[in-house]
Image (cartoon, rainbow, N blue to C red; front, side, top):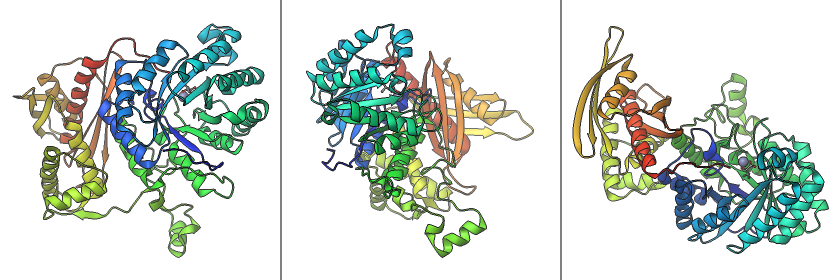
Length: 517
Ligand code: KIV
Ligand code: ZN
C-alpha cells in the first residue's frame, strides 16, 4: 500500500504483531499472526511490523511467512543496531514485495548509561553504521531513537541528522515509557523538523506508549507538528499499558477533520472485525467502555440520550457504528439454510475455508441451529474461529458429560482423541470446571500452569454461545487457547485442549533465550 504524495497523508504502521505481542500473555502462533496480517492488509495498513527476527526462530518464521503472504502493505522486521540483527531481519524479509528494516538504539542518558553502557559518541557511530548496513538490503530503512522523548535535544538532533545522512527514510521518535504529555511531544517533533537540516529527506514517525493514558493524544500532537507516520496497534495492545490504539487514531483523524486535516488509507469498516480477532486470539478482552471498539461505545442507556438519539442521531453520536463496521446483529441463518448459503455468508464475514474445514463448520452450524433459536453473525464468527483453530491438532475434543450442582461431588466424564487414539476418563473436582480440567490433565499429563480462564457470551440471551479462553504457562512461555459452544463447560474444555495443542507446537519450536525489544 504505497502512501500517496498528499502532504497530509498519514502512514499507519501497525505493530500489533511485534510490540503488541510483547504484552505478557499475548503470544500468538504463526497461523494466528497470518490471520491478523491478512486482515491488517485488507484494512489498508501501510506498514505491518511482523516481528523481531533475531529474537527467536518463531519470530523469524512469522516475519518470513508474513512477508510471503502480504502483497500490498510493506512488511517490516525489527533489528537492534548489531549487524547480526540486521542480517536476520533482511533474511526474514527476503520474500516481501515491499520490505522495511527497522533498526533502533537507545539515545537517552539513562538508557545509554545503564542499559547500553555506551558513550554517546559510540551510540552516534552505531546509528550511522546500523542504518548504512541496513541500506545494503533495502531502500526502506527506519531508524528509531529508543526513549527518544527523554533524550537531550542536541544529541537527538545529531543522531537524527546522521541517520538520515546514512540513508534512513523514516525517523521514529518513541515515547518508550509513556512519559510525554501531548504539548511536549508535539513540540519535540516540531523542534526536530525545524532544527535537523535534512529533515525534508525523511518522514517523522511517532511511537507512543500508554503508561499515562496519553499515547493517542501524543501521537496526534506529533502529527499536528509534522510527523506523517503513526505506529500503533489494534486495541492498543503492547508492552505494559500498551501502544497508541490504531482504531482511536484513525477515527480521531476521520471525525475531527476540522482540527486534524489528515488522511489515512485505513478502511475503517474493518475496525470492529480486527478488534474482535485480536481480542479472541490473545484472550485480552476489550473493556466495555473502551473508545471505538468497546461493547458500550455506541450504546445509549440513559433516557435523555435515547430520546435525543431518536430525534437526531448526531445529538449523542459523533460517528456512526457502521463507520467502524459495527452492524446490528442480523439474524442470518436458520436450520434450513443450505451449504451454499453458508459458504456465501462466511465469505461475507471474511472467511474462506478449505473443503474439509467448511464441511465440519457446516455440521457444527447445523447442530447449533438445532440448539439455538436464532443464529447471528457473531455466532458464526465464534463457531468458525473455533473450527479454524483446530487445524492439525494432536489432541481433539470428543465429548464431555458433567455432573454439577450444590450436592456434589462434581464430576466430569471426558473423551479425547490423542494422536489418533481414543481415550476416556472420569474425574472429580472442586466445581465442574475444575473437574473438567482435571479430566484433561489425567488424559494428557502436563505441568503447565493455568494463568487465565475466562468466559464471555458471544451474543445476548441464555442460549448464547460461550467463548472460553484458557492461558497456560510453561517455562516462562504462555499460550492462549479458545473454544466456543452453547455449553460453557464444553467451550472451556475445547479452550483448554486448544491451549495444550499450542503448547506442544511451541515446545517443538522454541529455542532458548528469546529476546524482546
Ligand atoms: O517502545 C519503543 O521504544 C520500541 C522501539 C523498539 C521502537 O518499541
Ligand atoms: Zn514500543
